[in-house]
Amino acid sequence: MKIALIGATGFVGSEVLKELLSRGHQVTALARHPDKLAGQLGLKVVKADALDAAQVAAAVEGHDAVVDSYNPGWSEPRIHDLFLQGTRAILDGVKRSGVKRVLVVGGAGSLFVAPGVQLVDTPHFPAEYKQGALAAREALNQIRGETALDWTFLSPAALLAPGPRTGKFRIGAEELLMDGDKPAGLSVADLAVAIVDEIETPKHIRKRFTAAY
Image 1: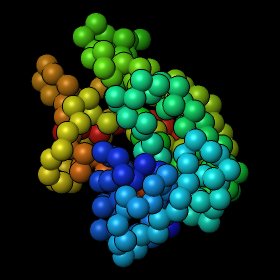
Image 2: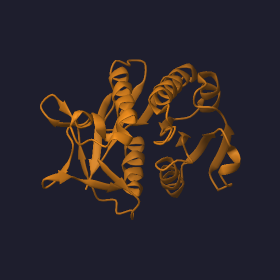
Image 3: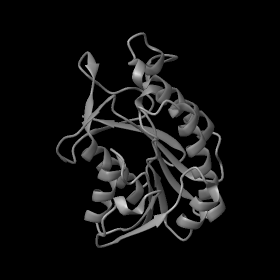
Image 4: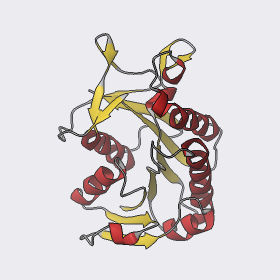
């Protein structure tokens, strides 16, 4: 498949890039700084700004699917506004390009921990992640009304960390997956497996899902 990847140099995107290439896909990585991505077999790097819908449209046209792992950075003070601005521009650009299939990587904060209660609204949610989580929730709420795209929104496990690729994990829907009385974890390598699995064999068209051990 021909896959366009946004955020290929990030924590999640770099693992998605490795997973896509290892499965033999042709990948176009959109990057503001193409020099950060070394040449690899099956990889094409295009200079593009995720905040510019026209640049996104030009870069993703002709692809089978788009993976959006854009994140301005958890330490970015404007993360809330930039995440929403980027998500809107990316989705607008994908629509303009004629590509239908897009997978958006969001956050765990919008997963439900009790009826009507999302993780981001709980008292002990880490303050340093709150603005990004609120933005991802708002993005999900906007995406839910999107009818022109075959979208999927993936909320990772609450505890996402570096670790080995096992290919073994659970899939959930709207609720936070737990490990006993604590949130379940997931390696970013296995998150990449879940992302590429969904691109190859779509099971969550116009739905949100999550993955964890």
